[in-house]
Image (cartoon, rainbow, N blue to C red; front, top):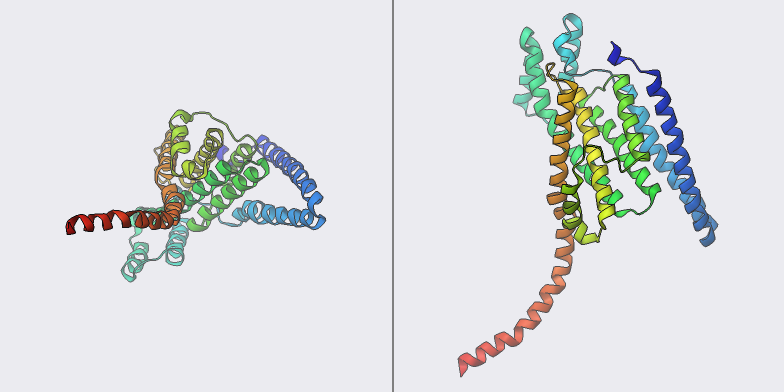
Length: 323
């Protein structure tokens, strides 16, 4: 029960971080607003309205919306029995039928698990994890790419803070929506504190092998295409890795049904998983999103030039054959 309670220090830290983040955002917004005012007053007003929309829609709403979902995790199915166990088994089945694309055979299969009594929970956990995990992994991968691009390309702390916090709060919300339930209040607060802390203190390099990530970030497809400097690329990699770790922790809170794993083991597992995904993003994901479109665009002009350049050579070759 101790782990499920919200520590008063956690609440104080959470509120303090919100205040610090709000002060930082307001300070940066006012600074940019003053510059826009020198251009035109309406630009300053439009900028403030845009910031307000982003903060409310990208931070406040995702942050609050999570608390309206029921508290649960797959691990609890092992400890539940009687009506509580039946209730959550039905919820898992309904969530799968509503949120996952299943074939008619799979729909009948998952409904049949409810009649298997003692095996119901194990069968449902295996099926739920197998079908839900790919959707969650796609959301995580896409969000980490966005975080990397925003914080690696952006040279403004306001945009970095808004992009990072909005992406992470929205990702937690999406994972909860896909699963159909959320972690405990204490776990949610820990996740939020981690996001707010990293928003304010982006660049926390604890336990991160940046020597391996820097060349990947600066020499990869995105770094070459956009000319990202080492510091910005490293910051983007750090923030993307943080996003991946937050997502892995959220996933473990909800989908980890292995009661034998310790917190230390889960932490190591989440870091290893996050690092592997980040390497994939830096090596392959940006190739598709940035390098190939740029290459294809300029390739049309290059192809035309090469075609023109080849005409004299071909003509010369035919003349030689005639001789």
